[in-house]
Every structure is written in structure tokens, then in C-alpha cells.
Length: 100
Image 1 (cartoon, rainbow, N blue to C red):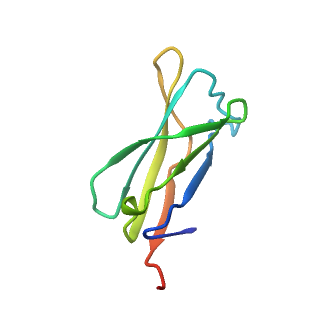
Image 2 (image 1 turned 90 degrees about the vertical axis):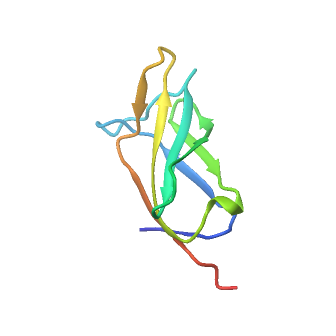
């Protein structure tokens, strides 16, 4: 499990894959990160598509978005036909306290 640091402007990059581990094409799609930390409220944030053909998306957290705790999330894709598609794996990370 990787670490994020509470209060940082961390960049989260996700390579969206289907069940066969093939890239999910993102041309014309809208992509959201659906996530929560600990027992907090569910958040939905728009992701930036950085590679259409390889299914790569980014989200840069604002400092106030990342308290310490267990991060759980998934990438939700709305394709050009308005169908919901999700990346095949959930995201599990730990957000640790900053040392200073």
C-alpha cells in the first residue's frame, strides 16, 4: 500500500484497465474519481485525461482534501454512449500525517 501525505498537493495518476488488463480508451469520455478517506463523506472529483488511447488519467488533490486515514477510491468513466464503465481495480492508499 502506497502512502499519500495529509495536506499535500499530491498527484494521483491512474492507468485505467479493463478486466482483460487492456487500456480503456477514453476518447470522448468524462472521467471522475469517486473516493473517501476514513469514515468521511464520499467525494466525486473530475479527473484530467492525459493519454486517451492508453487510458491514463490524473487528479491533483488540494491540501484540504486529504486528511490522514485510509483512502478508498475508484475511477468512473462515462463513455460517449452515456454508459458507466469503471476501472477494474479499486484504489487503496494510506494518507499519513506530515512529519512537520
